[in-house]
Length: 549
Ligand SMILES: [Zn+2]
Image 1: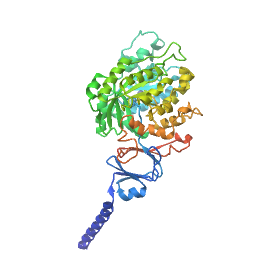
Image 2 (image 1 turned 60 degrees about the vertical axis):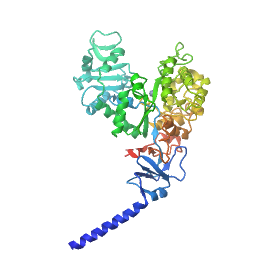
Image 3 (image 1 turned 30 degrees about the vertical axis):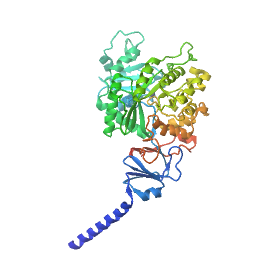
Image 4 (image 1 turned 45 degrees about the vertical axis):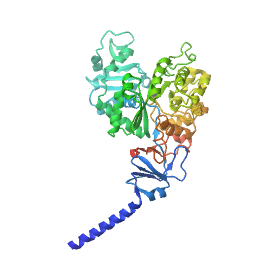
């Protein structure tokens, strides 16, 4: 019996090998096949296409299920069950490292009482057992009684531990006794910089003493920073993002991102923009931009003015609600021109924050001194929030790219009119009009200023409503984007805005296998359903980096 068994097993094994071999000989091996899907290219739904094959991070075939699965097999297969596949979503203006740094703070913005603050901090302590406790976002106006808190409870629950909690507006902090001691703050202090309880510090400090306390908090170590960047990556993938921007970094921050991407710890593609520093120019401004499959360093970030909310945006005529104030330029035309000259010489993009119509005009005019009509430099104006009637045509003439953030419109809509008045408001957040000028435009969030959620960007772009569905009729609807244009602004146009459109941003053979799979067809779904959209899968470089449970 022993001798009979062996040949039988051998024959069966050979048959099995021949069997599998013949099947797989006919079929080529892919790494991943996504089938039974609805696919946006993104220009339109791909007719007769519901299957994608991927190998080595690249799309190698698209076609019908039958066609692709008769030609390819893969060890990993995703049955999309009719769900919709889009090119991976890109955030064209965000602050990824800043978002990651923010993860070290306990988020107190949702606390409805000081007891809830303490509860959140206890949870934070479990995750961060060592060092300082830092939090931000508390607002006593959301608590019963609306009185400022004091530090007695903090001292009791966290004895000897320095705790610094920044108020929502950033101008006040609540500090524990240990933090006050470490900062060396003692009586007397400048009037208005502290609040007292029976002649002692209550723990609330304002303005320069608040800054002093915050500055005492040790910077995150390299290990901690790595941890925050890894968590931030995960959060981006959960939201459906495959690529982001890091708008304004220093050399060491860029090198850290690069090393973590190469180690496979950051699986997001990043377009990193340089702060205009000597060190950055020396290191990165070479004749070719620094480029890996995951990182591009080919742009400089400049600021022309401040923000509209704090009346720092630079306007051509005064604020309607502050008749002596036009805001200010933070970079002069001469300074901007000096950086433009460098950027032009080395083939770098220059991406300048400009919000007020005066700042936008200054940047357009300065760019126009260097750009020739027909140039393909893709120099950008970030936000381009308020544009004078006479200046729209500059975007078309010099191919200057308006880089917009749709949720800024819906975050600002309640008060933007008070600052600007009706005439200027008509030319503010004018995304569709800007699109008509340049022919394409990238869309982002500016996170962590706004939520990282690209679905909210899409919804704000097309419905011009906030996350609560307000206002019912939409905000300045003549500047809504069509759904296809909104999708392109987050995919192929976002890629184009950093010269990546030949590598990614659309579903085509030869392009990077970056996909966002949603449970909703956001091009066809009723508007009210858009915000209920769920991300099912996020895929980067052909690998599943997020899968909904
Ligand atoms: Zn920004």
